[in-house]
Image (cartoon, rainbow, N blue to C red):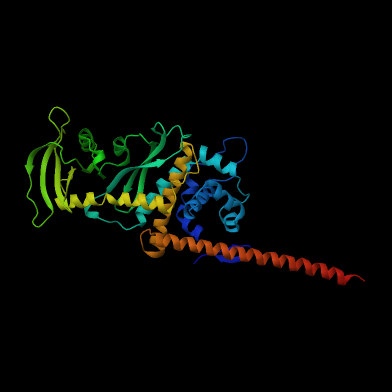
Length: 391
């Protein structure tokens, strides 16, 4: 294991530094973080990302608690904070006004690296991207986050790579922001969007096919359908319907291009899934939609264990910085858990990583105390030598 010189002694590379290793060749290529005034920057992009990743890993409940740790905790002061320290006003000014461009570049490049490193699942289904929105509770002073008259919320629109289990693209809007328009921005031609019923829109089904983008979308059971061709059903299967159809009411909202409609039953509940993937079997279509729940599990895990929605910023820029840093932290954990343990991200491994960082902090504090004692003893010896050297 790599060792570094620290306080004139050799140490194992701190776990935080090991976790951040995949960003080593990305950060230098990121757009420079510029000062908003004539004053020089108090921290660069690498230091900002170090601080934000530490925030998510250690489950701080507020930005003030984070700054206190950076100022008073030996481990955070020496290995996380900038060399000259960090002031509360400097940190909040930076995240509220800058940093999005830099973190977005790092996120984009890191998710490419993660996709190349992590094992690929469900190759036979093609590139699957689940898309969903998640509401973020805000405060009334966040005037840009419109939701209701007495409630402010922002909405994260996220594309989730189902083949590798990692976030892929994101957009942030006010809580009332429509979800359907973001599908075309999140998926690329050749990829398959996996969507819940809220994304059903017959004109978009036509548009996505025109753009070369595929979809697997659950639709409402009462949707009108015109059957063009029925396909044989597999034996001993939960699939009860498989046909080429036109969806919607003629001359009102009917699809111009035909789609495939698959109906199947799970636990006595019927599911209707529309798709343009005629190359898959009906059971593969059902499986593709089932995988959509991975994005739901991701949101639940991510919000609970990395404290992403404990807001430390109030501006749209600041919230985007917090969301991006939380996604980057997850990507770093995905790479770390795969390379160190051959596993997917789990709270067990995250807790293990946190414990190792805390142990390093204890060792560092013990080393600081030893250095202080050594300096005091050396000072006392020099003083005694002078006393005995006097005639």
